Length: 73
Picture 1 (tube, rainbow, N blue to C red):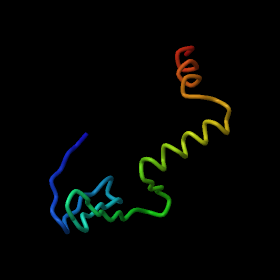
Picture 2 (spheres, rainbow, N blue to C red):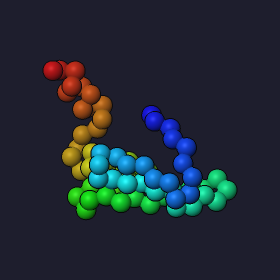
Picture 3 (cartoon, one colour):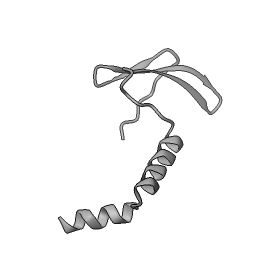
Picture 4 (cartoon, rainbow, N blue to C red):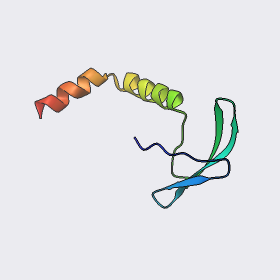
């Protein structure tokens, strides 16, 4: 993991097309803005994990099943 120190208004670039800007720092909360191409999906981690879980359930497989298949190869 890369840890960076940024101030309000400062930004970082990812892969030449994603910009993350620190908009506001208030107490222990940080407000960020993300500029990215429309085809890039952006989710809060807890939402992303829930989507992954629902997708696995819909497919009828679990991560244990995926690991077992990987071990076969």
